[in-house]
Picture 1 (cartoon, helix red, strand yellow):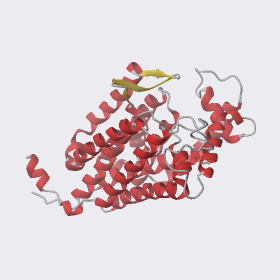
Picture 2 (tube, rainbow, N blue to C red; picture 1 turned 120 degrees about the horizontal axis):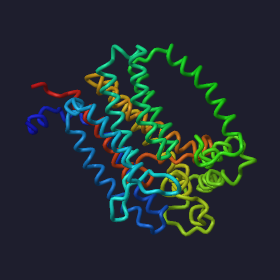
Picture 3 (cartoon, rainbow, N blue to C red; picture 1 turned 30 degrees about the vertical axis):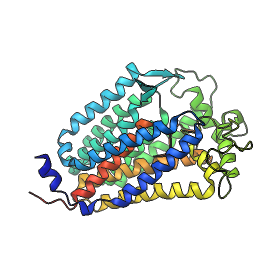
Picture 4 (cartoon, helix red, strand yellow; picture 1 turned 90 degrees about the vertical axis):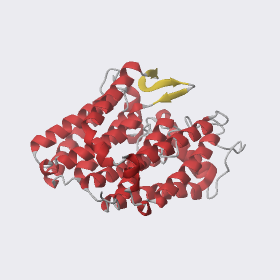
Length: 379
């Protein structure tokens, strides 16, 4: 049965360019992470993540997404259990429970895998209920299902991943044909809510039990009023300084330049959230432009695969993965260049993080499976 399924694919349809772009980014990521960690051994761990990720991508590319789609409710339940597990069993790090230790100095971050699981589940749900997308009953169900997922992430707490995941969920239902009537209504409701949020966070006296944590409030206020919150903006200020100091060609990986922002220790977590600053400083504008271009190519190829998919389910999977990688890239680069408030979002395929890179490779595997199914021989 398995051999028969594998033989049914038209491998000439395999998106080789997408694979090459992902592998090229991963190679750059391993090198930059190794340099950013300055002997911390994160480069070798990143390589391990890529190897596991490639295996996961291959598996997802060869297992028919329509077969897995039969179990979409089970996937959703597993998704919720995974997110609940980190709240119960997760390691407390600076007041947040986002990781579960798995031994050997490695940890597992459920919210990263949950992005891929939610994309798959929502894509199937929207496909099954396509005729009900613009009915209030379904919209309420969609909001509840997404809300349960988002609340579990928010409880960790992880506001940036919550916002990113909500954006992915909106992108999927928009691609499914959500009426502009509902979109405009949502915008009309969102504007006063954001105004109220600004008034709320502007008030002194926030504590750890508040809706918005003090450190989150300070990061937002540092973006709105940088002159009054310079201490909370230093990470981004140093990030911009690092990118600018790299000029056109950069200072080189693993350099000993005493003027390096990274080498001087002025860039906290350089191998994770601010990896783009390290790329800009050590590989220069050209290196950073190459990385952003490769990410752009990956997003475009995912969209093209979705537009040429043989069914609606495949289309939504590709659009979900494209929005995931695209939005995460936009947020990370936006933070590094002070276009957006400081948030803890990694740069796809480049930032250090085994769970993140394995999950991303799994997402790419789903897109590759959609491309293979375009020319599948029906038995």
